[in-house]
Image (cartoon, rainbow, N blue to C red):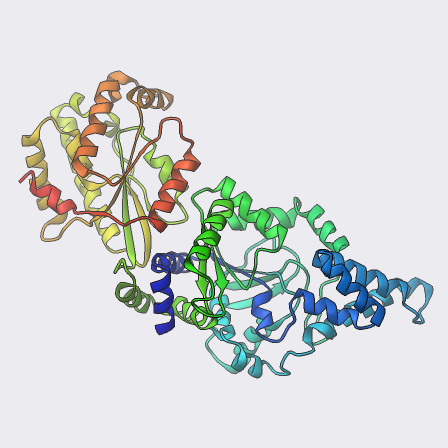
Length: 536
């Protein structure tokens, strides 16, 4: 993994991105988006060379295409011109009712020839010569969906070759389609060719249409709000996408990314930006690209060479233990697990924030339904009610600490930190008693799991208004002064580096701020055991 270590040295947050990608893969929530870059490395031409191959049918067309290209016409527009010439110049022989079908068949045949002209004749050769196809193939086997913008079947052929020649595929299968699957199939990878499918073996079933010309692109865009568009949009909102071999030149992809940014602001996707060499793009230019993609699309850009891409894929295909060992050793954070506690007064928006952060690992405030006394102001509890609350609370804190401690690679957010109970105490004598009970009933000979505090609060009057909206009256759940005192105490207790006043902010902006703090900010774990020592 020496090449990947070099990449981490250039991009200091890369280790965190890898932690998040591996976590999403383990959760079954990582999808792939692949573009022309993966096929170019197998000998398939890029857009412009492909168009030039198609234009060689006529010297005049080739010359005209060069001029059109020089004038700045888009590739799909150039494809429309070539297709128009193909139709108007056709001089074949066919029955009148078959003429259009024959013309279209010959057009697709010419595209097929142009695509596969320089591709090695066997899958073995392609895998041997391609810098990272074997690793990509193995990762594809582990994800539920691959959105493929290419026509060719190089990726699916690599999967078929693996299934025939090895036993490494386990009990997972794969399917190729050019229509959006309406139902996800268990233990199945779906490779969805959004622009159409044109396999090398001509007898294999291909898609009826190829999105190649300006006309076909326009038709595809007009269909976007239908089933295909909604299916892909939900995929972008509910999952994390790793984009490989794509230059963001496709307007439909940018549209899905933009809609995800607006509808799920905490959900960030990843794109690998290919480099010929590690120093091809200056740090300043990399920052420009990174920040632009982040702000426009909630897209985190990872700058890698082909060898680094290969090692990244190998890491994602590794066992959890090996991933932990690598990240703990190679990354500036020296860790593979990141813990966060969402803290704040009652009605600050902690649970609402947690709901927006489902693109990470999350733990609710309670693992079991709490007694009704938990919703009362602590200074209004009777001794019997306080005892019932304490019994429930310490059992919950023990279970939550076990869960937070035993997590695997990734990012984990928990609603409330274990020492929030100090804010629901009359004085330090009561806090000292609670510390003793914490050690006796919760931690015993272990420590509380440390983690960064994400502190959220709001003005006291807004907190009261939110409680009223939930049916909780100030007389029973706390008035403005009570809630503001609770907020001040918690902030003084933890001294958080990440504090957000939610007054006037919408939930999406709050969640995006927290997600970017986790992925891009300094990780500042709070030593909870040290705080406990103040009250011994």
